[in-house]
Length: 531
Image (cartoon, rainbow, N blue to C red):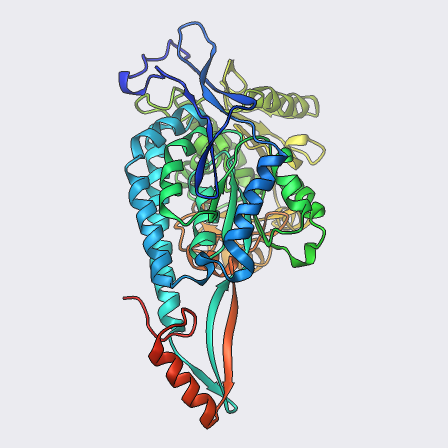
């Protein structure tokens, strides 16, 4: 591994003026903030001698601001009578279209901050932004389809019903740092478009990139519909949950955080939970696997964005027959990956955004080595201030921390097996159940495995790495990995509830309904649909 001096930072990407955000969004107003602030640093250095780069600062909102935001969301909801929850579908869609157009104008600003704040490569930063925009447009189209399918009356046993999906109420939205735009918006956008009011707190890392979008949120939606706070989750989310006024907790993060917040809600039985949590996705490599393809997919699966994805491959099971050949090819491929800053050409690995992450990965590595593992690849464990080189660890045993922990970084545990029951039993015993990657060709070996794995996880990837997309496909998990779903179509359902108007087939009701439809004064009771 070579760690030469990194290329100079392009002029247009240099941090010349830090962003000192002094506003937060509550009740349709960008409110001035003169209270305590938190500095935002990047682990990427702007100087030859390494030192963190200050990017700016954000308000450190407290409980009083949390209550202010909650009051605004509660007023905008107004027990379901508010402007937003009762608005025509086409009008909510128009608001969302206004927002996404304004968002597109901020592409370069947001992408620049994605690179600096969380160390995401330039191509992946553009991809995240563009994917988010596509997600919003896909959500709009899905909502149109949902509305069209609901623009009718059904009749059963002499009873008519007009069935639609309605909002749930007030949503507390907490996004992750690794996809602070895309993953966060897979919560926020469907919650909004279905007519809910929201309180949103960005993650600790990837927070400044929300600043260019504040005005778009403010001017695109009615007051109180989107409220955005900054600061520590404990100071903001906890007090909000304790009031019992939150109807939906939408969170992508760790199950311990989700449990802590749910436990603070006095009526948790009333709380809808839409959660994307941790995972320990395995790869299972069978004896007849195409090793070149398998290595390529395992590189992508384990080390895309340095392994900082819930969908990353976090443990590899390889059959004993091909163990040596796989490890040799895999180690060579890992050691040829190129490290650099996000804007550097042709890089595969980028600085870790969490200052303490290299030390944490080192702890996992030291623990594994103490318990009998070895580093398979030559460059494994080498360090610079903001990065630790990926380590392939073999043999991994169950008493190692790296076996149990979701490492969320560049360390790859490998286990060999002779009997396929071993990885299956391990998956069944695991606390997680999101995805698996299965590599092999023999259909008679694959078929029973697919049938079993489909009941242990929610996505079986055949000869390909684990991933979230395309966003129209289901994205969820079993056990501690998820609750509810976050794909385009399913998310609309997750943030809504089926509700309907029913009436018996009588002369009075038919006359009344006819008049209601003719008057077109009800936003709910309508057979109009959006093209």
